[in-house]
Image (cartoon, rainbow, N blue to C red; front, side, top):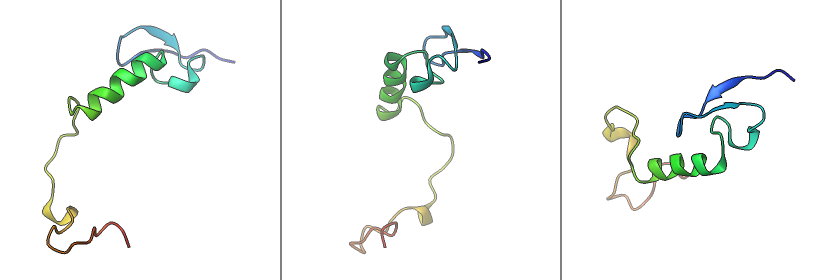
Length: 67
């Protein structure tokens, strides 16, 4: 199998993408969990504004995303 050397987005360690398959693109489960925690803690965000029409109406008592 070919090697694809990439840099871990969390610790910047170089690793073989295919060897760390369960955690790719991270080098380890630890780095994967650090990144997940950063998203959960809202340290990472996707830029953009929340559109009102994409949010459920709080007065309807029903979530518009669930049919």
